[in-house]
Every structure is written in structure tokens, then in C-alpha cells.
Image (cartoon, rainbow over the protein chains, first blue to last red):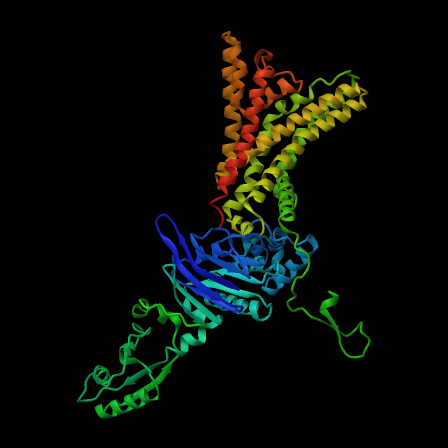
Length: 320
Length: 303
């Protein structure tokens, strides 16, 4: 769907993209990065609206520099910011946008009715957009990106400004865009948790460089973590600290967890599960110290971990 | 819908239909850039008269359209009733005579045409489609100029039909009508371009309205005042050059020089053919310049 080869974009003061090479296949792909990581710049280049400083990019097998218009005919784009005029109805607006994509008038009307229904707008679609809730506006923005039945949609922060329920509904909708409509999706976000649930593949960029690209199952598998909690005893008033020392001595890697700062986090040790033997080591160590083992459980990890400081200096690319 | 329905069983098909309301792919025609540009042009032109928009936004343009046509209708009525041999007002003079109405229409509708897309940030949605910057600018420019042309040509048509009704000299009337049409076409392009540039540079609609009104009335007021002073103080030669500094007097100058109009400058001291060429050049440069500025304005807007 999308291929980039050492794609760079430099502005006079900043480098927005730095030799970014990606290969994104069909399906739902998440593009994760902090604000300013180069996500929007990448989308601009992929739509053929902004020339790359160096490198090349292909969308749907077409070169972005040469075939921008052909790409835009078959790609949908949902911007991050507000883009809806308040004084027209969703129907009028989406019909107009469908015609701007080249759909004949009757097809534009038919597709608009279908698409608005699919994104969950019914009677309200005849009312002016100005009176819509944020969730409804996001649906209209999604509808205008889908109305011409693109092969790929680029969604820029579609869950921005939504409450948790609206967020879940939008994520569900995005999944359906692929599973039910057969349209591939590139969705950006700075929230990793929600992409983990929605996307089959996640690309992490930071400072315009590729930090990581792999399927979401890889992310969670390679970061299997054990959470261990123990009681204190008379000989070891701080059981957690004692266990930490003993485990470190035994060669088990401890890690600072994402749960730091949560209530009770001080009593939970997170350690890397290298294999079956780690479980035995923990059991034996706890027994040797004479502590009570409150819990030892596997933590399904969040892709937020790729942002942990120690992961940053070694960008790894795991082929999907 | 026929492809979305399935017949089930062997019972009478009319009663047992399951409508498949799942997602349907679109494999029909995609008509491309030229079609999108035409659609945008049509939508913007209709929008300038409030068509396809709320009832409230029809009020002002329709009132102004009426106000433009009423004097023409009155003139025709009087001419027919009193069996005049000639219209009391030249065709070419009509737009100069009603310039305030034209200015108001432009001030109200130019921001409507371009500022809305900028203010609500709809422009990136256009540019994420096959529509290119040049298509967008041409469609908007064309729509604004066409809206002005409709506004200024309609009363001329009323006058022309009225003159035929009053059995005035056909050749004479047709010539005057045709000359005036060329003149208002130039006026529409010039005013449309200037109005759009001012509106596009001010995303806030109110500022756009004020800028257009100010640019038209202040320049016209200043030019006519200085012209009058120059005429009174005996430097009549300056009058024809001063007219270069306001859009209305520019059009006046061009039609005086080339389209058989009598000038509304003080003492009727309109430009001759030589100076008139400068006027025409100025008009064309301004129209091309407006287009250039609009193209530049939208260069940075993409996304």
C-alpha cells in the first residue's frame, strides 16, 4: 500500500523526516509518534502535496511525486483539525466533497447516503453541522474521507477530542472500515494504547526517524513481563527491596514499569521473563528469603514501552 | 438497489426480499479534475446568490439583484409609455450609475466565496482530492466574475428588451448593448479578482466585507475629488490620468476610449485612444495580478 525509501523532508530550521523507510501492507496500520514526530509531514508527502527533500515514496504502487492526482483519486484523507462549515448539512457537505472526488451527481448523492449511514449518522444528517457534537463531527469528517470509496484512507488523529465512549466507537468504526469495507487504513495517534487494540501493524516514528515497525502481536509478545509482589517479614522489613537485590544477584533483569506512580506500584516488581527458568528463579528466591509470594503474573505489555528511554537509542526494525 | 437485494426461497419473490445494507464498493465513473472544477464553479456561482444555501443567505444577494434591475425596469417603463426615440441612459453608463450596488454585492459575496473555506479550514479537503490549486482558484475566480456578470448584465438585458419593445433603432441599440456587455464583462473580472484577493487575505468574513467596501469607495471618492479639484483649478490634463487609480474609473476610462461611452469624468474629459490603452493595460494587469496573488495565497494552505 505504502512504500517509502529513505524519505527525508527538511525545512530551513527542522528536519521533519529523516531517511524514513517504510513498507506498509494492506490492513489497519497505526502511525505512532509524539507531536512533531513527522506524522503530518508524512501524510502530506503521501498525498503528493508536498515534495520530499530526498528519497521516494509510493502509494498504491504510484509514485507520489509524479502521480499525485491519480493517488488522491483513490485515497481518502481525514484531517486532524476542524474542517467543516457549520451552516450546511452533513448531506450537502459530503455530496459536494464526493463531487470534488469526481463522482457524478447521482452517484455522489447515493454514496453520501450510504456512507453517512455506515458511520452512524441518520436523521441528523439533514441538520446544519454547526449543531453537531464533536463525535458527530468526527463521523462527518470520516464520511467525507470514505465517500468516494478509496482504496486507502489516511486518518490523522481521528480520536482527538472524543470522550472514552466516543473514542471506542470511533476505533470500532476504523476497524470496520477495513474488515467490512475492505479499505486499508493508516491511522495516526499519539496514544499508543488505542492503536494497539485497533491496528494489525504499528509504525513508531520519533523525530522523523523510524523507531520501530512491527505487527502489534510482536510488540506484546517480545515484551513479556512478570509482575511479582511479595509480603514483608520480620527478617526482611522491606520484602520488595530484599527480593530486588536477590533477583538482581541471580541475574534476572528488572525493569521500571509503566505502572510506576500508580497506587501500590512500589510493592510490585516488574521483571523480564527470559523463559521458563525465570519463573523457577523467582519461586526459589522468594522461598529462600522466607517471604510470602502474593502474586506472580504475566503482564501484557503496552506498546508505550517502545518509548522508554533505554529503547530509544537502538532503533530496531522487525519485519512484519 | 437491484444488486443489493437477494431473493430467498421459492415463495413469491415480491414478499420475501432481504435487503443487503452492507457496504457496497463503488466501481462507477470517476470524472476527474475537469468535472470537479466545473462542479466547484457551479456550486460557488449558485452560492453567490444563496442558492443551495439557507434562506437567510439568499436575502441579501436577491435584494441587491432586484435593486440592480428596478431602475432599468423603470427606465424601460417610462421610455415605452412616453414613446422615447432613445433610452435616457446609455447602456455603458448603467454600471457606473449603480456601482454602489455592485460594490455591496461584491463585498458581501466575495468573502462568502473564499473566506468560508479558509476560516473553516475546508481547503485541505479540496487539495486532498484530484482538485489542484489552479482548479480551485480558477473555479472561484470564474464563479465570482460570473456572479458579477449576471448582476450587471441582467439590467442591460432589461433595457435592451425594453428598447426593442419601444421600437427604437435596432442596430443602434444592439451596438450599445454589445459594447456595454464587453464593458461589464471586464468590470466583472476586475472587481471579482480584486474582491477575492481582499477576501482571501482576510479569513475573518467581517474584515473581508469592510476591506472590499473600503477599497472600492475610498479609491473612487478620492479619485473623483482630486479629479474635480484638478478640473476646477484648470489642470484638466491631469483628470484623465487620475482615473487610473480606482477600479470604477478604470472601467469608465476603458469604455470611454474603446466602447463608445461618454465619460463620467469631470467635464467629460475621458481618456483618448492612447491613454485608453494604458487604462486597458492597467485593467488586464490587475486581473492577471489578482489571479497571481490568489495562486500564491493558496500555495501554503494545503493541509
